[in-house]
Length: 75
Ligand SMILES: [Zn+2]
Image 1 (cartoon, protein in one colour):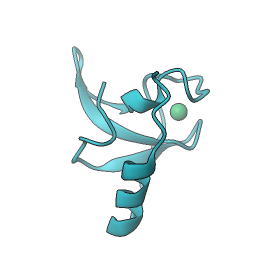
Image 2 (cartoon, helix red, strand yellow):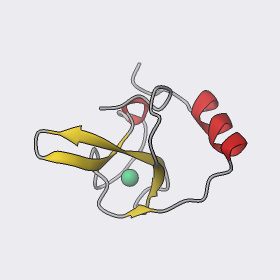
Image 3 (cartoon, helix red, strand yellow):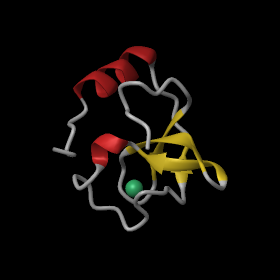
Image 4 (cartoon, protein in one colour):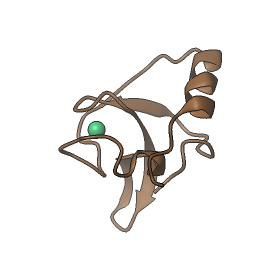
């Protein structure tokens, strides 16, 4: 899984849970997935994959704020 704070690629939003998601490598190739910070912290029927990633037009400052302040629920 990918950390939201280290990810540099396109960010979309999961249509099932409304959380940001990323395109990340798996053993089957690149797939849309949730971020590692969301582990045990968000309810999503598709977790860890994202079956309907919605395209976003993030403003750079807006995305930066989400990335830096996103709660890490793995602990
Ligand atoms: Zn989701």
